[in-house]
Length: 71
Image (tube, rainbow, N blue to C red; front, side, top):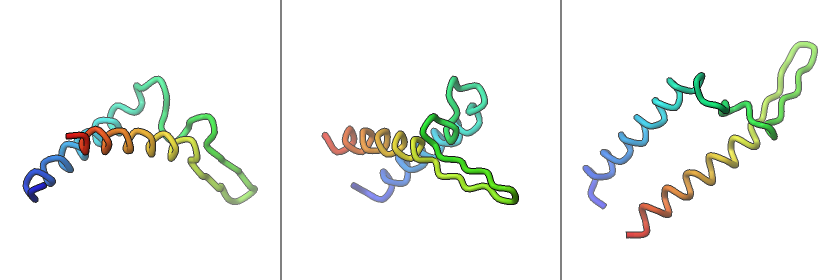
């Protein structure tokens, strides 16, 4: 794949992520607050591990990469 085409594809992905962040408040689900994300609140600290969000993003990105490599 040429460098120019790769930059265009990365730019489109970046625009898509930016739109998700902008419209994140209006989505029926919130990335980072899905069931399965681990959040432990202590007296003076918070431990947060977005397990379900990471799994969802991994599946979506794997599907996108698989679709692009199919050609």
